Image (cartoon, rainbow, N blue to C red; front, side):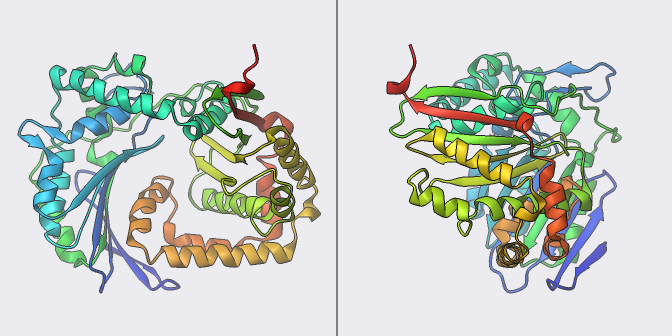
Length: 433
């Protein structure tokens, strides 16, 4: 077992790759009462075209299948897995993102029992055509519920505008039509391809003994048989760097208009330290331009163009990346103009003020230091960083090294008219005939 020291943060992370390929990380937190364990596969909604394990030709599966599979994993022949976690006092959950599917629990006691439950239920699939058909109704209701949420439609509308072919433009849950095509055979094909231990990561953070916990996990895995690991072939069509749609409007039952300006990232082939630096530099740039201490924020807030819903964010994964900036607004067109003007000003390298950059860096370091005391934050973020060959605990030293020149250079890659899109959700009363 390898011990990885983070002296600045006073943390020691323990790591071992097991014989079946599973990456196991343990972060002991003495004195904490709660323990979080996450078991995650590098398989999300964008993985729709791939070569199934043991085959040679790529297939495309129905949209929403990774999320569907997540739902079905909790149902076993002997009953619901949630009940089993409850019996040992653990709280269990799961989620599917564009790039990964995570199963997790938190508990203060019976940690080994719940860890065994987690490992076993994720590694013992049980799907039948009858239970798959039953689940379609449940997930269909979930899709309908999200379709009625204006903020969700705003978020996905902006992403749909940006991408020509990349499956990030497709809703994680799919559509009622796409999930209707899912069969038990589809689920087994996806499970067997993406749920091999060599494509997964187990992370434990809490008041545990790393040696005992690692031995417990290793013993559990050694009792099971898995096929030899093989590299997974995922296929994506070539994606242009310009946006697919410049401007689009959706009319819904909302009181106040909503708008996002989207910026499509060009640098989407990054990983490791390079990706971490790029991601953090762009986040700092966005806060410089649009944060609550910025001139922009003061002007548009006092001008009544934004309210407390104003937000900006940058998302980056291998293959795609985008920033979203927007708010509920009484005049979305004026807000879009103001955001674009601010972006235009930022094309001048001297627009980023060194003092403001240092202030935001200190604020961001403070955020990470506080967050690293939250086991829930660490449990939720650690795997995402590892899957991108970054380390969550490298964020603070990386921020310390970022310069104004880095910020200008990295932010420039998401700038430009051809990379900008606008998506608005307007009240039904403003619908054009």
